[in-house]
Image (cartoon, rainbow, N blue to C red):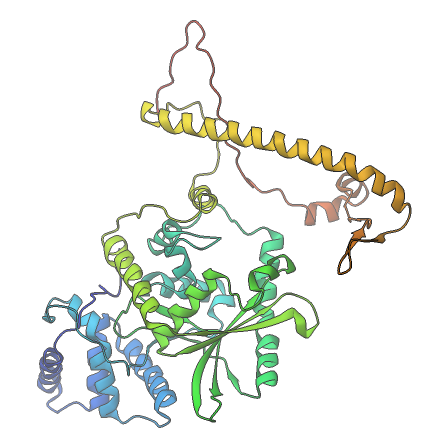
Length: 473
């Protein structure tokens, strides 16, 4: 598998780039009989470093001009664009083996700006071809912010194995997005602009929608797709750039945002983006689905260089040690996430397939699993017993409440007991009645997945006379 960047960690000597630029200039002069302009030389350098077409290189020059203009408030000269590409091509040119790099880690300039890869406007929600192109960019160019938490083992949805498989181009066998989950994703997408407008109104700022995919100039395997950007002002009125990350969540997740909290998996994502963009502040805005101002929380995350360096080390080890060598990582993350990842990439069940032999090396694992399942069963019995005791003791209160749904009981001078006993109602669909009365509607909306889940059960059975272990895989 081919990846655009080798991702070496150390900077080459700048003089090496000057030699390569001079060689490219000489080659172009030999071909055309004239000295190329700085913009033409920048295009040649980009083509050489990225192994891309002239059209792709020219588009990158255009995007990079836009990036530099935003950072410095003025349109760069052709010489400045060439200088930017010389510096930004550090890691790519190391990959060619033609550029020697300094021994030991060098101090990188803190005054860098990100490198523009492509304008991804509408790609993730566009035609199948556009979505495929967007996935290809994310697959080959590097590690995105949402993948950062997975590589650090704190994601609730993915781990390092799922990131590795996606970079290797391995499609998931099963779709993990049921209708309700897909609905939440769709709601999150369409809610971005109203939430961004709310942030702009509350803070009195302009919010920009940046659709460019960026990468870090020194660590090119770090990429960023941003939600929004803005310019804020300090207490003294000084302007500063900030990123805005927009999230949606259910009310059940509100406790994770209590006080000044931010879920750890979003913190890793924000730190990733600040490193790529060389920005010191991110505002993360989360909407919990209601129509009140209290249903939106905003948290400010400041850049911490020490944490950022540790984060980069983890990503570097993964990209160089696993992706470029095509070596699957040792699974990380909570057991439930590891299990979910393994399931979604496993083959669909075949009920007609005969039993397969499991090697004896799995025996300790099977014994451990049986012991854990027994422990869980006992814990469930204990919980059920406690539930029964609670229900028995609630009877007196139920009788006292009668038809009332709320009650209070004095406790002491400062507190009282609050009791609520409210009815719960649920809406259900009579699927069988629907199938009989409206068969066409039933067929249109009731779908059966080939496989929604699989359950593993383990037991110990006695070998009967004539028992033979199966053969095959």
